[in-house]
Image (cartoon, rainbow, N blue to C red; front, side, top):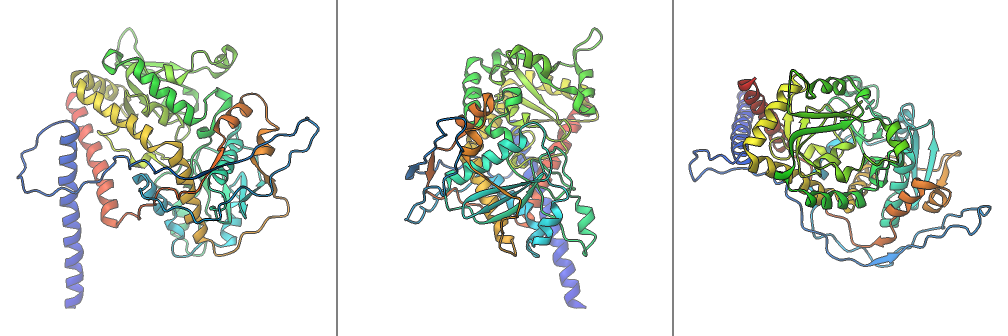
Length: 492
């Protein structure tokens, strides 16, 4: 009886300490973000969760990878039997990955104790568009359904580039991939039913009630249907675009341009546009992609859209690939409360990387944010710069590939069986994809192709979150959102 009392007492003390530490940390962080000075004793100790970028990786030996297309259209494209490999062991990494890599452990947590069996993977085929099998560094694909536009093509292309970047370093793998917007694996269906194993399913986003495993989206290698270039090139164009117009010289309004027909929340955003009766400090434009295609995308150059002090991010059918482009703009991102996350966005902090906007009161919330920013220009500008620095430094293609590397390696460790090639699976390689492609598809593939192998190890995967760390991160976000809502309500 005495032992049970001590246990209960220990749990109570733990949560009291966690709660007090979380509240203290959040208060200090909000004050620091807004450049206020709290009255605190000089001896106070603060727990710091760093979001600064790690140091750049050291130079490493690289090997040129051959790539040749057949000389005639009638020639058969042949995949190389194997990619070049190094006889020497890889150099160990001397730098840590960005902190968002820690979510890899959390995303794979449902299978940490059970491992992943062949039956689990086969069950996930009910939700998948295609199956990815990697054997001895070669990629095989088994299709189950059709993906929208070229999502599957550029996702597969990205995995092939990973194999070229780290030849012989990706273990044998068997996984299912869904390329639609909405996550499908409901945690409730499996957490409360021990008789049904959780199927592992990869996709581009997830949310707090789903178990889908986030993976970098296709647009990192290009989105030809709407003329969005591969990320490495576009990221530099956005960086140069930011230099063309200083933040203080930009239009003092919140800007959004996109397809409002994909979701009711976007349709609702149109009400925030300037009218004869209201000016919510927002300039909202509906994107007509059919018309843009006809005009040759002359008015949809993302690098030329960073001309407002504030840019609005709002989800569509689910998460939107536009988030990284908006955050990279040096403008203060007004982020309408999201329901979904991708592989890196859980590392973003409100009132540090972006200003949170209420989903239920979008217009007055946007108006307040713009008025606050125009009144506190240095703070608003600093917040926008913090976000663009995060994107430029922590979302380089080097780190995108390293994230894929670690996610697939950690996933492979959980497999309880040796992957084999299904009878109908077809081998894919860079030559079989790029040589047969045309137009922007081929152009983007050639621009995003990995031409040299890296023999240094990728960045070092940081450890999982401890329960206390995870609690404090979630509490920090929740308290920051609550504080902004209070400021918002005090005005509106």
